[in-house]
Image (tube, rainbow, N blue to C red; front, side):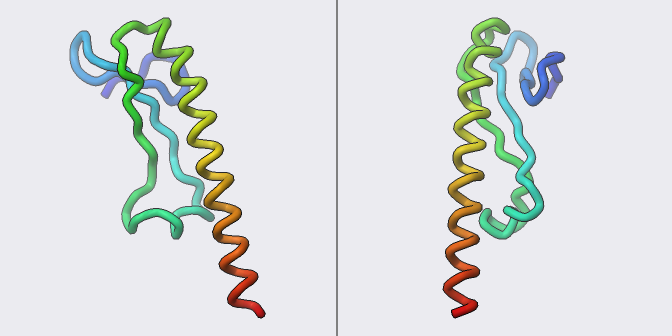
Length: 82
């Protein structure tokens, strides 16, 4: 996997497809399968310009997922404290 200079955007293989990668924050690791420490998603393109714009959208989607997981953890902790 080769870094492209764009944060969290990587290219796999020669002339290959771009991927976005984001580490799962430590407080959220319990909300994911054991051993999973990052989210990796294909951007479905080998074009660097298209990859950059798709990466912005994909990273935003991952952040929304993290927000939802935080809410799940908060609800779970509140239920256990009552």
